[in-house]
Each structure stands twice: as structure tokens, then as C-alpha cells.
Length: 156
Image 1: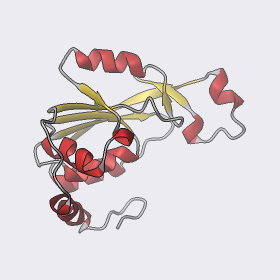
Image 2: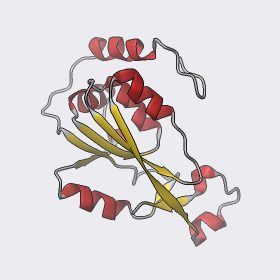
Image 3: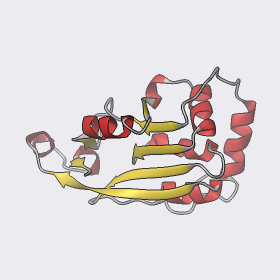
């Protein structure tokens, strides 16, 4: 359905059909979401606790997508007004969002990838991003292969 930089033009339709076929999850769903990646071992956001605390002051609710069913993820994204989250596969759910929703993606400066910007455009979702910087730390440096997923980074 999608190549590296060229998602299939019918990808949004596929996600809409998938969402319509799923058994609806019970709500209510919060309108302001932060996609929490603290459970991931990859691309660690060093100051994620601070980001969550700062967004909580504006009413954002952190959610861990890996703990939710597909129906719950569909419901969250379909009912969201604003979604903030670090770059990661969970943001693919933006294809379930309603037009007019906003996505603010957090990306690291050493790996800027625009696929979710394209998905947002396909869905009529407003898009913006915040670029963070890599943090050199002992954890990242001790990994046998220092590939992008092993980097630690932070946003202001």
C-alpha cells in the first residue's frame, strides 16, 4: 500500500474502510492526544516526561498505543482534534483522523522523514513538526550498532 516515499493514492480509502468495518470501541475519547513512546526501546526521547508534563497543562492526555486494541486506536484518532507524538509507526493511525484534525510530529534532526506529513495531507489533517537534537549518552554509545533506532534525542 505504500512505498518509502510514495504512498498509494487509495491508502486513505483503505483505512477508512478498515475503520468502518471495525467494531467501535467505547468512548469517550480525549480530543487532545500525546502518543507516548516511553515503552519503546528505540529512538528514546530523553525528555519525554517533560514533554508530557508540558502538554498536560494544555489538556493533552498521553496514550500508549501498544496497550490498545485496533478499535481503540481507530476511535482515538477518529475523534482527536490535535495529536502530538514522536515519529514512529503509531502515527500511521493519522489515516483514521477526520479532516481538520492537527498532527504535530516530533522528529530528531538526524532522521527527518516526511511520511506522516504525506499521510496527513491525504487525510485533510493539518501538519507541523518540531525538530529535536540527538543527545550523546552512554546508552546510545554502548549499543553494538549505532543505527537511527539506537539514538537518544530531546526536543525543547
